[in-house]
Length: 265
Image (cartoon, rainbow, N blue to C red; front, side):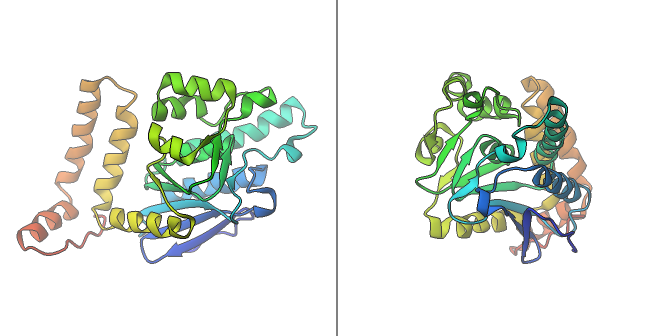
């Protein structure tokens, strides 16, 4: 699979089924500028439209200091309202493309994640992080508010009351607190972060790729529905898997006591 040249992202295929994406502006703590918004919008849209053999994606930050420091405030300094909103439209579309990406996406938070950086991690399917990182939705300190789904994803992760406290105060919190609250799935030592994220990604990749995509869709959309409507959506997603080669291969492999060979068909 060939990739375009992204000015702000480093694309690293890991074997046939995994892709490592690095936010690649370490000199400014991987801050989100307009070009990074454009690059991410293209990447997440491309992965949904034509994933090829890919089955899982990991997102991390270049360098050791930050996963992503949020919006690039130097670029934004002096922007008119029209310019600001035009830029934010790109960010909005990129966040939505990430949330709706059909492949599982794991955030490997290797350094601090503030504002839009934490929002980016929250848009991923789940989060691994290293000890010592600081996480915050810090926008209210700048006279704005979260605008990358932060007011939607944070309450879904940690609950309404805790999310209100964190957003209203803009208080940083630790990876250990994020783990306790359900925002972080696993805290990993720095040397093991990518290794553990890749191991989880590989475990995902060994399962039925169509199954994973349908399950992700069902969870994502079902959370916005009442229980029985969500269950009806789940059954629709389930039924699409019954007449697939992968389903037949999975059952046959189980009965033959061997590892299944899924092809995404």
